[in-house]
Image 1 (cartoon, rainbow, N blue to C red):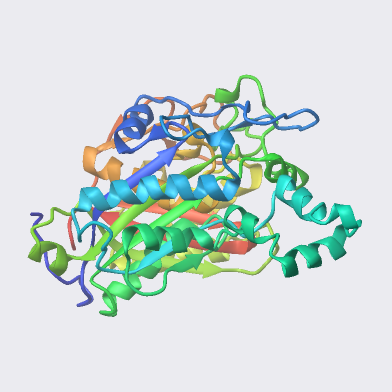
Image 2 (image 1 turned 90 degrees about the vertical axis):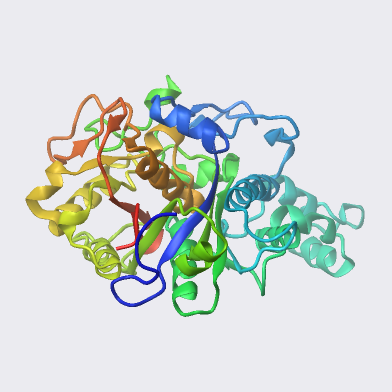
Length: 431
């Protein structure tokens, strides 16, 4: 059992992580992912699951097949649920908490916004084709007749939380969260706050996203957000590099079991790390862009450090948002420089998105798991493809190969469309 106080410096219950689970384009589970991450492997590949004719971007970080899971047979909602179930099961099993189908706390899930894919839209459009009631009339008729019912579980992302609760037996109504690409981190923040308030002794947090389909690629392409460097796929994601040209969309899920340190200690559980603090700030500046002066990002980082009761000097490693888009990487650097000053150049920083792609809604949870694995192992996975540093972003990037780093405290950043920003501070021991 780790040493430390049952409460933090502010007298609140210390919150620890006792279980973690992960699925990414590198594999299923912590073991597969950690071996691939520290060895600098890349999970980004050419898309083979569906036709990409006419698309500017034809690559993605797709989930590999495994026995019982063939992703091309799923809708986006189905696959989001499947990988969420795997990650949550891995986290709960590691935590050794509760009984089969009986988790002693709430469930908080980050899922994509509910959007229909074209195959489902077409089925709705043609639901009453024999009566020539297509289009909006057909949609209304389908909804009234119940024809839509057999599609609901494939397209209603809120159903993911219901399905997870049914399997794992969490307490109370599950909470579905969508704060863009900060969503996974939001689930952790909400759980920490609930435990601190004494509303729960444990919680399971899940972030999941499987938006790799034609509509998803088209939408992000229209925003000029995706990399079009299709060949070779493994070289496309280049966070903080001068030649970066956009992010690579990816699938993934991350799950964490959080508990009060008192609760974990009472049942003899060995914490994997501590959530010292969380900071959140939105700017509402633009639908997709952040405020140019970085005020909201700076605010989220500052609030996370204040909530954790640590100083900028205490941060030993930064798990960056690092999307590989020209504007976002620059904004992250400007904001970090504002908070950390000249010391920033001495803090090892990495972006997991260079290896796994951008898992969107799931990113905060996925990268929280990786940040904690880094903390446990004293190894920072590399930012691969970092061969032409941007001179306007002078950072200590862990370039191309993993680095051993002595670290106690880690900052993990998540920034989303609409200026939704959440930052988390993890530590090896309670402070």
